[in-house]
Amino acid sequence: MQFIAPLVISFYISAFIYLNAFFVKQLTVAEKGNELFYNKVGIFLIILVPVFLLMEKLIAPPQGSGAVSLIRALISLIALLGLLVAFLYHVIPIEGVYELPAELDKYFSSDNAFTLWLIAPLLALFI
Image (tube, rainbow, N blue to C red; front, top):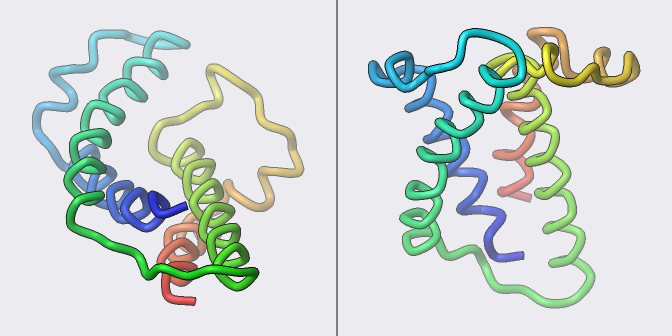
């Protein structure tokens, strides 16, 4: 589970690049629907993978063992998955490809929820 901390940091850096880089619109070749969603996901992954490989070499999470380390890793993983779902709700809209259950809407669709999911992985790293 040593990849979680570099992945969280890489996700933030990649999201910033994805939202602010001038070349993202030029790389988007699809117009609508599934193709547009998968095109945006592909562009994001093209940015995420090199950033993750770099962060993996730079960030060394604390080594631990036992139940506390496992609980810390699980909390970080859940927070990272929540961030991913919130990202799919707000940045790369998934609505055209897949209709998520209404129960998830109350946890991920509002701007306040998005902000909380942006903060949750960072807090989980410092637990």
